[in-house]
Image (cartoon, rainbow, N blue to C red; front, top):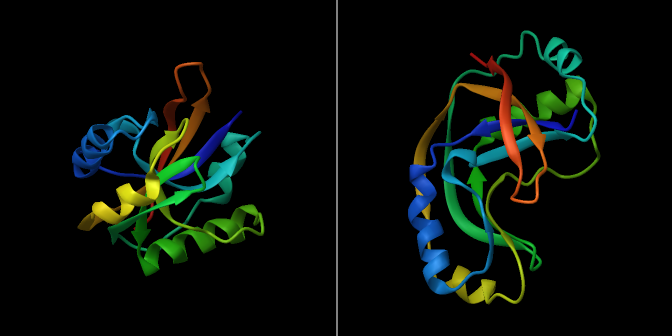
Length: 162
């Protein structure tokens, strides 16, 4: 099953940014506000029961995340940067329990999967975002089903971390 571990975020905090990007002329598939999340670990062929079992007892305590600044991965993805020492600690603990991919964790929230030519650098220069105090109490194991209209996410299990 295609699934991932995420920290889900309140979509209202980023809804205004999505509207600004659309008004600016950014083209692509925008993430729906109910799907904003930070991906902690992706499993192209995951077995949910085994993943949940390995995460039993995962406790790092509640913590806050700050969203601060915009970025992009080439002309593919527009995102908001996420900051939190505890988030990094949580992701490191997940990697230790489930096996690492060897890639550096770059915490972010995808806003748009870009299509065509976009002036992303100008949009980033002209727009700022800073949201503090987003509380994290758990992670979610979510199934991801790809469709022509975009991915459909459903929560398999919520794991409290405090």
